[in-house]
Length: 274
Image (cartoon, rainbow, N blue to C red):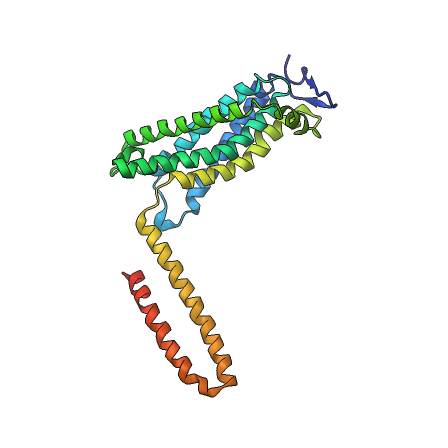
């Protein structure tokens, strides 16, 4: 009997998906569709990068494949764990997924920054996320993949322990309670909600994992400083024109300030040109 024939009755009324809903044909179809959409978002992100800083396809694959393997491991763990709890597996899966995308993201960020710190202090270049050497080394990529999957395992263990608290039973009865159709509930749990959350999470995590060169960061910072100085000068010229209309004698003081602004802008412009 499939999920359309077996449905779990909610104590508060309404029907929810059955134990095998996450792993039947419709459930796997939604999971494969979600994976394809998430992969497409990462491709779109690459084309949104500035052309001068855009990663090669090989580096992009090295960066995103870590996310792909980690997300697949977490997803399969959530599907299995959802069937181990009492009650509706769809709500348990959604709770696990949302915790992975919030608390889990914080753990991942902390772990990546800690690995980068160890890389700088100990000289372990292979564990510096986003750095693969020149030419890119598959060994460095493999080491970072193992570390990232290890971080995801820490995330899953931490959240599984957190899920043992009693108040989650009340959350389970409340979440998705307005939905009475098991197919619609499964679509929300496996596709609609994960798509928008994964799109944000993958985008943010990819920024953690990708390498940002010091040169690009310096040029971006100098560009911001130059833009701020330009805005300051524009505002100052406007104030100067208004002051001239009110008091012609103030031109002497304002002209001295003009020379000061021009002298301050010269070093920054020379630095940007260099």
